[in-house]
Image: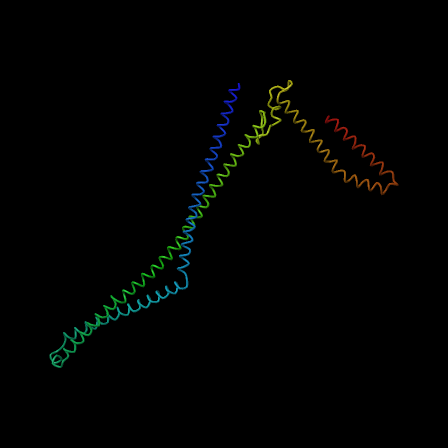
Length: 304
């Protein structure tokens, strides 16, 4: 017998150790998961702070002024580019007219020196077209491309900063919601587990067979669920309990009515003292009090 009890005690201790080890394992896994998610949230928060600072730097007055200067240069260069293109078109048209004039020269005009003058005009027009094209290609267009690239880079950086701030803020909010849900579920599970443990510990304190939901002894179940108690089954015991409850409710109602009637009784006594010369009120009050006493005695006897 002693051996079996020792074996059972060791088995119970082993089960309790396993139970506490499982609880500790759950707590450690929970702490590791929370630390990992918190570290991820801290990283995302640092990224959000970086991109917010970057966006703030891009929107500073000095950077805005620089960007406006670039846009103004772009506008001026585009106007100059358009002007050079129109100039080139006019010069080429003039060059074609000079060629037509050269082809239509008469011998008298040639003798008068018009051919030499037309040749000089052609050379001058050709040189002006060449200078205009060189200025357009190697100066104006190159500067315009450079200014356009700078403006596009600034706009791209600003768009990237705005996108990263919004995207990272949304990801941080999602991670925070997931962490809150994870912690809430864990706390709910642990509360349920601890409640179960408290019930088991409460049951271990009492050497009875029937318990309530909280683990405390249920004093009514041994009477209700017993097979035979002094020749009575469980249904009769339940009827007795219901009868006792009904009589108790009646007694409580009578006591409540008595307590409610007391203030009116004090008022009636005061009124009776004021009209003490008339014996009608005293006689009526004595008769009413005797009837109340008889009613209380009858109720007490029925309960007994």
